[in-house]
Image (cartoon, rainbow, N blue to C red; front, side, top):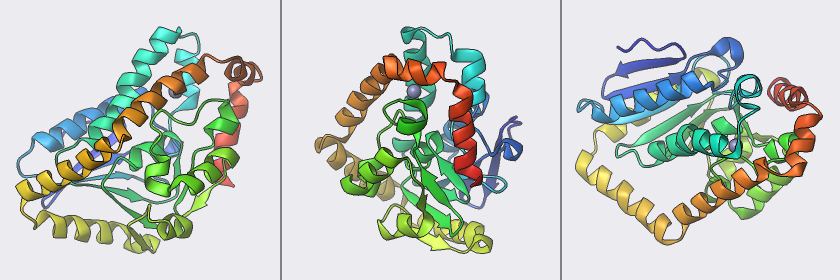
Length: 268
Ligand code: ZN
C-alpha cells in the first residue's frame, strides 16, 4: 500500500477506500493531500481488482475543506495566472477526474463536509452520510468569492436550495441533505462504515463494463444538458471573483477572519 502523508489508501474486498487523513486539522485539504488523493484515485482506477471507489475521511469529520491557512501562507501573493493554474489542476481538475472516474464512486461522509470538501464529495456517484454530517459552502459570505471552484450545487441540491445555502452560507444538515436527494443513504454514525462497504460490495457484484457504460451515458446526458460547459464557465467566473475588489477587501480585512468563520462553521 502506498505510504501517503495525508491520505489513507485501503483495499477492502473489491473496494478501494481513499480517506482524507489529517484528523487533527479536521482533514483540511492541503495541496500535498490533494496531490496524494489524485495519485490514489489513479491507482484505484488502474487496479483491475478494484470495482468501487470510496472517498472518506478519518476521525470526526469528512473534511473542513481547502486548507485556508496554507493558502494564506503560500499562495496569497499569487498572480491571477498562478492562481488559475493552481486551481485548474488541484481544485477543478482533481474534482473532474473524480467525476469522470470510470468506476462507481461513493462518498462516505460524517461531521463537517464544507466548501472544497462539499464539491469534492459531490463528485461521487452516491453518498452515504451519518446523522451528524453537515454540509455548507460559506465562501460567498466568508471570502467574497463566487462559491467554490466546481459549482455542482444546483445539480445535487436543486436550484432553490442551492441559492438558499449559497446566499446565506448556512449549514445543510444530514436530514435536509437526505430529503433533497443529495445523500443517498442516511445512517447512524456507528453504521456509516458498514453501510458504505455493503453498498460498495453490492455494486461490485454488478457487471463492471455495463456499470461503466451506464455511468458514461448518465454523465453524457448531463453534458448534453450543459453541465460541463456550465461548470467550466463557472470556473472562469470563480477566477474573476478572486480578482475582484470585493475579494481584495475581505482579504485585507484578514483571511484570519475567513479562517475563523470556517472554524466556527465546523465547531458550532
Ligand atoms: Zn478559488
